[in-house]
Image (tube, rainbow, N blue to C red; front, side, top):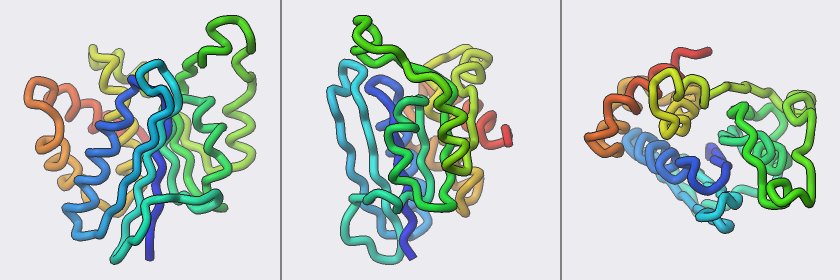
Length: 189
């Protein structure tokens, strides 16, 4: 049986490190893993999505609408944008953060209101203020690992495997704060 996870956000939020941690943790469990990263103007805060498929044998990384078991969303608007990809009964793990896209920044559009309510009405939503947790840890750049911790709690991969994967994936100078971020997310729920 194949599992499908999507990581969605905007450029600069650390989605790519999160996908590397996820992919490495899955590989360590002996699964066949396929990843595909799509960068849409990621250097300028544009949409970034990573498809992660794993199972006994996986042939393609692409996840179609209605197929994602979990969507890990780093930002509300991206969560809403990719909601149609979540399968019935799937889990949406969403950061409470709102990052204004360019049309909002230049005043051509308004950031949509009520996104949390709309998503909660359509999905099993777990909304987390990962930015507040990262601020408490003294490093806003660990929002991604806080969210990975929340998601990890919703997988069958053992806690110790995640810790070893983070140790092997994150640069040594940032390891301590990333381990604290993972732990905070993992034990949040």
